[in-house]
Image (cartoon, rainbow, N blue to C red; front, side, top):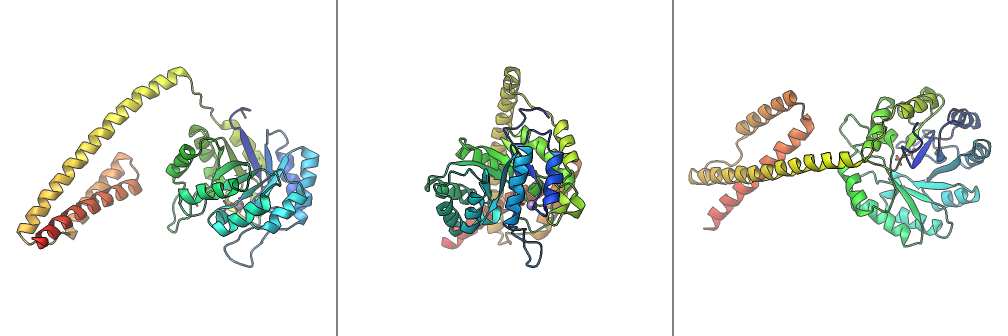
Length: 349
Ligand code: PEP
Ligand code: MN
């Protein structure tokens, strides 16, 4: 792996399961420029009765891993008690999980517990796609004088099954970076992807999108993992995956090429905007006609037909079906809004 691909490489199993499991996994990382070895000690599970983490004993194993391999160690904390145990075991970093970031009471409790411990903290995005909640959690920590060293983008919960376990909503990460360019932003391809085959492409994407690092789940025997078995990869696969990454450089030639392309992109954006205005003017005219003829606003067959044709085009063009569907729904909604306004005006007269 190119040593400077990432400023921060974090890897390790989803959960600490046994001393051997941690050691066998760490052994596989011994030639990697690892910044932190991770392992969950207390696991937030959707259903009770599943493996809920090994507890404090695992912290001792982590300390042993640090001693033998020289890796810094980190785990997830969700309560003041976890923080206390992590500090007592001199962990080098703790992270706050997605299910905690979502809850201001939890963040408040953690902020108070972390204050004046000096321990670095990474904050994962909340499970729901809410940028302000994420920013707010960080602000809450900062008000307790905690030097938040980083944030981790791990994607957002979805109900419908998609390619990803958690929807990345890339725009939220980009907006985050814009709001807080001072904080290192890492990606967690394991929890975004949810399956091992996606870890490679997502990690490459982390480089392409200029993330400052990645947190990747790795287990010496993923099939037997007690948590997140589908998304963990073996240390050997991790090493190979990191070898295959392509660095991106930010040189002058690239900058000038980008500038040209961006200029073209802006022109297209402006044309799209003008077309949208034109389209909505047509909608308005249709609304006026419907009003004169007392027709219904929503004409379902027409809408179904438009949608069908656009989806067909999407399939042929290579644009994503999801994107086009959302796009035409939004267009349609805006048209309906305009036409309903016209009708309202009529009633008002
Ligand atoms: C984890 O890192 O194992 C974990 C539980 O993450 P998240 O909070 O992103 O679900
Ligand atoms: Mn996990």
